[in-house]
Length: 366
Image (tube, rainbow, N blue to C red; front, side, top):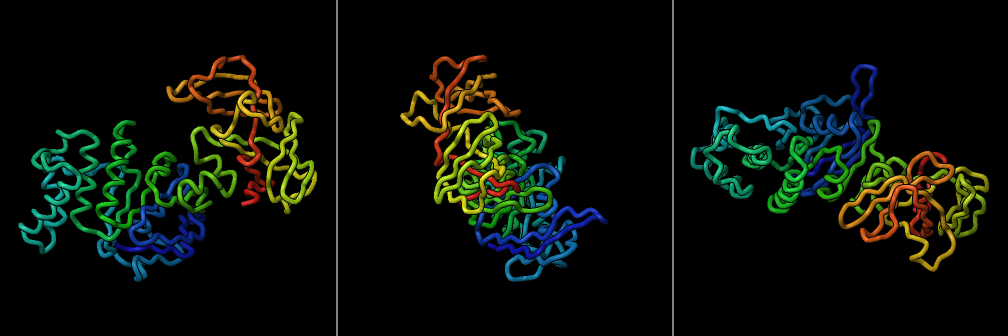
């Protein structure tokens, strides 16, 4: 196993700075996920850890060793790419054994390593096939097996499931989680898919514009986003964000006024807020209640349904709200009646489920 420490890591291409002062500690045996939109710098950082990109500034430690100038082959890691990069003329066995054949290992040792990796990945029966005879999921398992045989202390995954269809991605996520438990190795996984990040990562680093916005466990980021970017990026549907203005600020409660004039009361230490401040109110779709289902008469809104997604176990209602440009998402039980385009709904926003973000987009009261 190997820990990874990044201290003020930056990367520039000429005058274009793509990573800015990244500080991060990936613990021994941890499954860390880098997530963010395209172009945010997450894959560039992974390639810098691998030694495939030079570090413009800062220090990279793998284990206790400064690794800035260490050649990739000496870093004790293995990388799995989005493309499988298998040798088409070789069998699965030969693909997995190839890197070991370049070392001083004996044929018996190589065979033991390949058979062990194939057993872990449940692909022993595929060893004599060639890549053209495999499905996409099987090819990706071969690429992972090729990394396992090297027994690295650190695995790097660069969007390895992006080429697979939806059902295969689900299966491969399960297999990667099992693999992490069995190997107890340190893994860093890059993805733009927030579902992959939430289901795989023990901790997640959310990237945006070359910076890390927040680091934490999946549910920590979901329940307590540090800012508007994290709140909007994690979750499907994404968190509803409404424009609001501070009407009153008491010791542990803030009264807000929405664009349509509705008053919302939220339990919050708003010590940094002043009357008249413009803020953003956030609430997730599954935390919204129908007014008919609660005895609470405060924080009620009237919305008009635009369309409904029926998902089988639930229905996602997208509605318009006076004074707001974006549709408002509400997650309701699948058997909720009278859900159709054009229907009016009265909903209630539980104050303890609401998030407030200041004028700079920073979460308050956390």
